[in-house]
Image 1: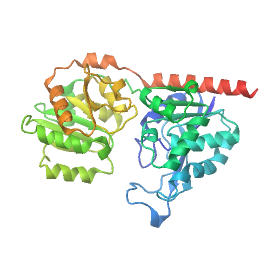
Image 2: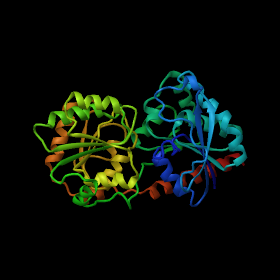
Image 3: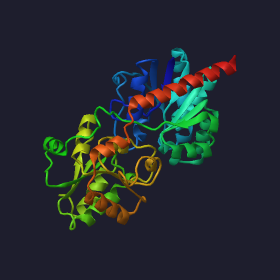
Image 4: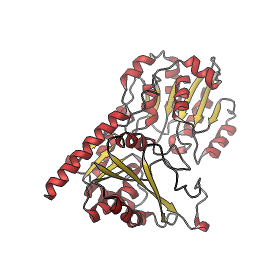
Amino acid sequence: MKIAVITQYFPNSAQQWAGHSAYQTLRLLARKHSVRVFYPESRYPTLLTPKSRTHGRLDPNFQPDGVETTYIPYTALPLISRPLNGWLISQTLLPHVRTYAPDIILNYVVYPDGYAAVRIGQKLNIPVVLTAIGSDLNRISDAMCARHTKYALQHAAYTTTVSNDLLRTAHKLGANFDRSSAILNGCNTSIFHPMDRQIAREQLQVSLDTEVVVYVGRLDIRKGLVELVDSIAQLRDQRPSLHCYLVGDGPDKSLLETAIRTRNIGSQVHFVPACMTSRVAQWMAAADLITLPSYNEGCPNVVIEALSSGRPVVATHVGGIPELVDNACGRLILPRDVKTLQTALNEVLNTAWNAEEIGARFHRSWQDVADELENVLEKTRHTYVCQAA
């Protein structure tokens, strides 16, 4: 099967850890099928490039290992062109996809990339499978983008989501009940598995006498990180050996630094730069618990990786997280609630957890994900061919 993938949710030269779930899945699909990723790169006029943009132009020669990828620029304007970006992407990528001549088009992120994929599929008479990851359905920016999102869901040959909760949202927005399903994310189980905490702390130079809370992800206040900082501040007197490590990069680091300085907990909260997967696994092994107090989520990889590593999780009751976490492996809390976050952290730190038991609860690999997606792609292609005959 020849698969064209249209998405910006994928590694690039500036953010090599971006689109982790898409990359891990496609890397495995590419071992059995011809897979090419078409990455639409937004290019802004120099004087209009927003300060929030953390990188310049992408290196078109960058190639993620194991997946053929083409980075294709298209002209955009900050905010102004957002409702048009799906159309702009479709016009830019159409000749490239036509030349590749795929059997099926796969997409990650419904708007703008999925909308563009559907439009291209209509032009070339090729079935399109959309993949919703969470923010694309939970945080639609405006009415026009909502309209395009609904159009893509209604006209795709099939839609997958990363959680059952997100599948229900997709149905409300127009995805066909009979042509949609949830495919939960997985993790690299050869890397994320229960490991010795003492050894991990020695490798990371973290004291064996401290209590360690770890957050892994984007430094974005919508991840509930201000609430996390407040919770650590309130637990300081009760748990003087408590330390929190924020592993990752993002736009709100300076805001968080200010919050930490204001609360005078610079010696308890530490920033760790974004790192390779193997290093993330070390941080999880070193942790007493992993936390993700986000306002919205799809099916967060960090929770899956934490559970596979045998570590309890304190996370918010949003998106697909309740499908992964219960009191047998952590605590669920309401978003934006410092008091319940503080209480949950305290309870989990006071509980003796069995790493092997937690690790056995969720042991889903990327190969499982790739196999399920392959089945969807093959069935969708077969149905489309039969209907066209």
